[in-house]
Image (cartoon, rainbow, N blue to C red; front, side, top):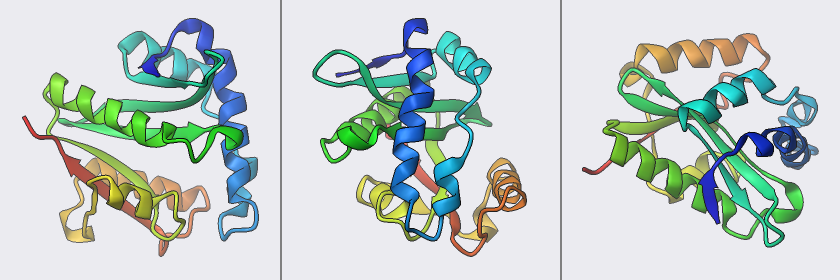
Length: 169
């Protein structure tokens, strides 16, 4: 089940993010496995704004989440994570569908994100779900700035891309 996050969910989201990060071990982005989770204050702000969703496991506990924010008429998917033991069960797809539905209902033009081009659970996953890569010449200024921030944080710019999924009215 996908639902908006509750305050009581927030403490668990860092553990979900750390668990999901272990999937990067043994890849070109292995360093990301040790990244700090999203700060609690950011999660609280998104939860209050109705821009944070959780996927519940069979036991009713949060097993994944999608964190978004408004970005100049688009809805930016800032983070999506599913705990490693819960991956492969469709929770990421369901979270993505919830984000897209919210974007449509709230009047956003599209859902946008930045991701790795090569890892199967990154750009290839989003391509299968209606996203397309934005060429550098068509990057909106906020996404171009986001990619520059990621490069400064250590991401390989040759592997990074911005993607978009228009929202049908």
